[in-house]
Amino acid sequence: MTGETVRIAQLSCGPEYSGVQKEIYAAAEAVGAEVFFPDLSLADIKRNFRDFGLDVRSGDLKLAIARAVALVEGAADADAVFIASCFRCAEAAIVRNELRRYIHEYSKLPVVSYSFTERTTSGTLLTRMEALTTIARRRALLARERQTGLTMGVDSGSSTTKAVVMQDNEIIGTGWRPTTEVIASADDAIALALEESGVKRDDLDAVGTTGYGRFLVGEQIKADLVQEELTVNSKGAVFLADCQHGPSTVIDIGGMDNKAISVLDGIPGTFTMGGICAGASGRFLEMTAKRLGVDITELGPLAMKGMGDDVPMNSYCIVFGTQSLVNALAEGHSKENVAAAACHSVAEQVFEQQLQEIDIKEPVVMVGGTSLIQGLVRAMGNLLQTEVVVPHHSQYIGSVGAALLSSGFVEKSG
Amino acid sequence: MAEVFIYPATSLILSDLVARFGHKPLGTALSIRERIQTAGLDSPPLQMTPDDAKKGLRWAAVEVPSGVRGRMSLFGPLIDQAEAAIIVRNPEFAFGCMGCARTDELVEFLVKQKKIPILELDYPADEEEGINFVHSVKNFLTRLGGVS
Image (cartoon, rainbow over all chains, first blue to last red; front, side, top):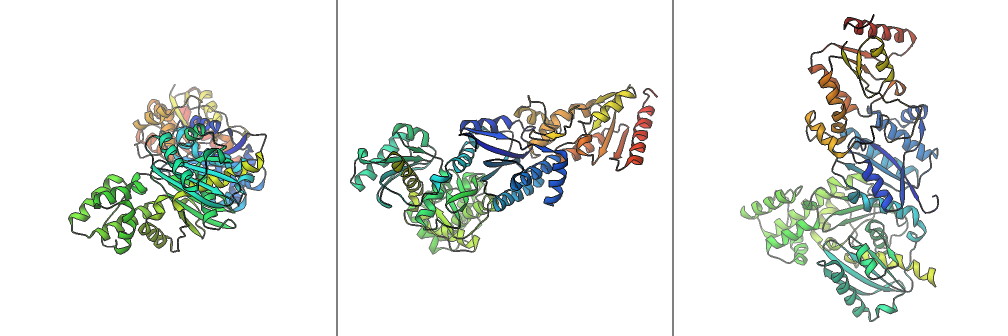
């Protein structure tokens, strides 16, 4: 890494002709990174492509493969890798997937992939680019395994805002509020966490923020650490699940989007973020609970009592998912079965849309508010054929990660 | 003089051959360099915008990947204008290479739909094939009425 600029190698097909190359540049620039194209000779392209063995037809995919080989073999230098190709291109999807696996397996480079349309903006890419730069820039901080001193983490999420106070590797206070006005919600959550922990704001040694509102809240509360949720949540998850060494997979089905992260020694290697529709997110489960006339906290136990196999439910799109929900109830299916089917549908969407893009390695850790919905955790476990781990305080994962990582600033200042 | 669409559109050699035999080449005339330091082998003009992918909707439906549609916004007008075409299959990178095989398929199909004179050639593998390649191009262009 040269100075503070993180160099991200771009392996791609189609971004220039889609008119989105400047969006990629803008997202990288916003997080202090530089996107570049590994320089190869025509002879290198032919040799690397032949050696890799995936016989695709498109010239730019051949070039992407050749560049990936150059990065893995050390013929080209980079701090991170961004793989991008056109959405809906089957040939490119195969290459994207195989290159991500190849780079993850044979190098230490963090890698993220994305399929774009002409509507992709730098804002969509920002968190992904930020995560790549964080992993490259803060590898030492991410290696932190114990929380020290008295620190607080605030997770300003799209649905809820959470705060956690930690002292000497223990959680001593938590606060939770629905996100309405970003700063006001953060203030309320912080007040609750401070009250429960019995400490004052001024007593804190360091503070970290994460989540969608991280910049705004971070500025307001003068946070020492402002960091995207992909790296922070991974750290919080492996810390709470006590799997800081070796591989693990973190799944966070959020209120607005989902994260699936393949982690090694607490540091994300590959990750995906997003989802096609809110039908694959916690929002659909909120709607289901509302339609069933139960509190969201009751949906999980309800689903555990039901069998969703006989209830047709497809939440690929939240509108169609809602139709399935209404139809299922109209057909006389029980609340329990409908709740189970809704959980299965969300898990299935995440499985099909996102988990195919990362390497699933055990233990699989589910975090975030939706991890408290037992029916969803069971459905995910069934799909993955594994026992999913839900650590204590899993709904506070971002706050715990931020409190843990911000304690790196305690020692720095101390 | 005929307007002759060339594919790969970036091939300077094809462009030169068409011009030498008295016709107007329709291509994008980008050189393939020895070292590739851009996003793609056939990196487009810098002024490409997301609107170009929308302009490509005239030749490819919305479910077609945006990169194909963006390319079609460049090649589509050239195909519309073409009175003849030369298509070289599986060319070497250095001859002129298009980045997207799906666009290659669509371009070839649309050119054939026009019912214009078309010369389709495989990229030559050795010198003898190379000589035959140039002869074929020359004969095709001469029949179109260019300079002999």
